[in-house]
Image 1 (cartoon, helix red, strand yellow):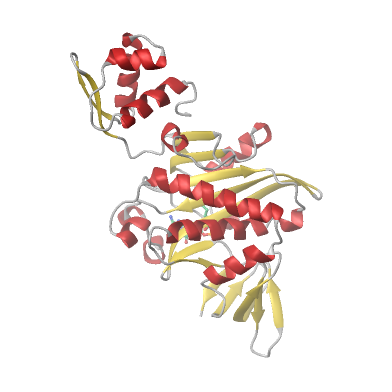
Image 2 (tube, protein in one colour):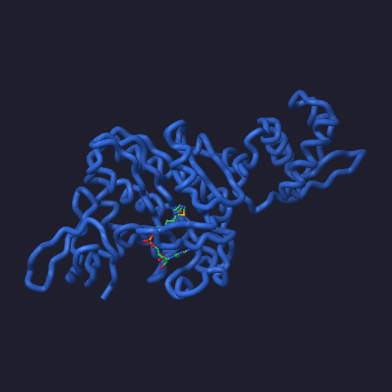
Length: 328
Ligand code: BT5
């Protein structure tokens, strides 16, 4: 069930006033007066907020005091303080979904450019080629619907654009995030994030693109079961304390929008340069498994379309568009 779709702006206004009160109790009467509702309605909204996990101390005589906000990716919380112009202006927030990419594709036709789908938990999170993506509580599982007028051949560039933005956002938290071609973000040699770009297009015309981003933010390592535990890391374990997911998402959406605007308005070489400087793959000996063959060699560059340039042992150059990349 989608959460909060009918909840009016009044709720956001109440949260804002409570936050702005900075530790001071505010009376129901004053709150009601400021946003134009009765004291009884204020009380009802307070009950709703408490149900959502807000810590609100209420005393019948003095009023309401905000003690804590829930660690949920509540869309009211994300919207307040969002600096991006269009990415994230529409947010569909769910406690639980099969996959945010699936829901984003269902919503895409009627959705505005930049609409975002977020879930606290995914039951059938997916990676490339139908691989499973573990998506327990504490992560950031998010899909962005974009509607650029670009040709189908340029869609893979958006994975590079997203990778650059995500790595930059994470680096601001003080971690050495680097991009592993084609769609992983690593810290050290561990995967902290995966990107799944999907497109719907008619012949050459792109209808919409969904960029799915999975970030192990405050995920408990014990919830990363099986083999994933050995290859993955989380921002929490790297930084040593849980991150503020709401403000991280606000920054991330802003950074993605900035890179996207560059992508739409400037030469792509600028983004390629940024990608290369953040790349963990360039310069390494690698093996790539494609659906058709296995390629071995040294990663030496990236092409305009996001293909990895490999120099193999006899000096021949191969450009690989997609595949599973293993460091050797
Ligand atoms: C990816 O695929 O890395 C893309 C993952 C995209 C996930 C997002 S979450 C929001 C949106 N909704 C979705 O349903 N998907 C997107 P790939 O390169 O195929 O990597 C998949 C592999 O990563 C798996 O086979 C596991 O080995 C590993 N893996 C699975 N869950 C992981 C996790 N939480 N953290 C790190 N690695 C994981």
